[in-house]
Image 1 (tube, rainbow over the protein chains, first blue to last red):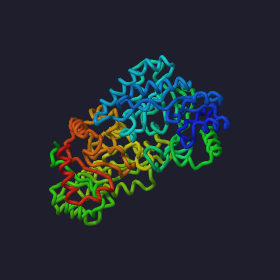
Image 2: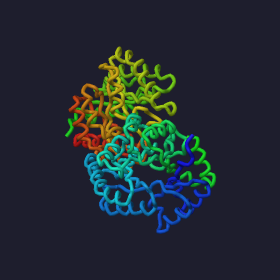
Image 3: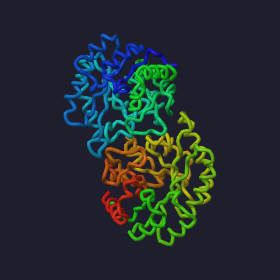
Image 4: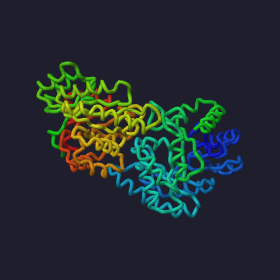
Length: 259
Length: 259
């Protein structure tokens, strides 16, 4: 049983809706917190979310430090997070530029170091999200929770933490060990499920309960590490677009509470 | 530059050929070692390979310890490896039966323990192959090299080691550390490449040089750990079936030598 008040809907789950639709439907369904992605924002998003009475758990995403021009874009992402009242900017750190993973990881660390003072000034915490190793080529050279934690610790700052998405880390035999040392470093927790078979490297995620992830166990380890904040439901799967909106939100609420 | 004499063709690369065709073509191309898969064998395979003057680097695969009836099948796999003169039986350990990864890993360890005396009697080494974490749902609960090494060490036996396939482990930030402690435990080394984008979770592998894996670096780390045996080229990708046989083998030889 998970406290329903901790549910935040990561709006990539309903990327087939406009932000306006998503906000209205969440408010009607009693989902009090959302986490938008930047491509979903327009100039009116912060006002719209606030007036609907919703909180924002995070903004997704900054990062891609290995790409040219990342710094300007990341400062803009921090500003957007602050405008939304999002306490966390999720960082998807970017793929290696070539074959040298150590170089990519050093570039990522340097990029976070440059961004951190700006984020702290805006009251936004940077949440390093390790992605599943199958995403290394296109999205992130940071692919284990252990590495994300080690990176976060380097900064020794209240404005840097990690985001633990079960989909990206559940397979890791070091998970229990790593979470046991993560006290104070967890900036977010995302849930979905790992389907068998998994149909796609990016958009093949399942609703909680449809796959093989032991969600209560991982949530327990995260709570033991002191995290009691929002739990974002982030299910990236185009099949969800076929589900009627009300039914989808009710299903998500029920699965969340059971998990 | 890699010594061409170390090249072994893992025959899954040419699974669109019969074993007889593969043996004949490898012999003609001067590839002196092959690694068949069990489904490719018939009662005549060992004789055919021997008479063509080829060596066998490994047989793929045993394992799937989490499935019912695994023990009988694995003993048969050991016998087949011995018949072929394969020094190593590659173990793909099997997926979790449910959500409990620790239980799956314990089942795998117990299965190896039961198989080991039989393998030792037949002079066959068991090679635990960690698979990429994206394959956990269907193929293996052993998904990191560190875990495979820890598992191998438990047995403290010359008849248990690990197989290091670059495709499965290149992403791991612990790779250098883990290989530095792997002296005497490496039973095999497989090469291919990680394509960007990767089109498929199973059969989207690239020929060496077409992707982002730093093959010379990983080979160097493996050699520093004392492994100087065969290097299997294992490229699982149906697109290779469209390449004329002679051209494919010449391309593989050239890429192998360059890497």
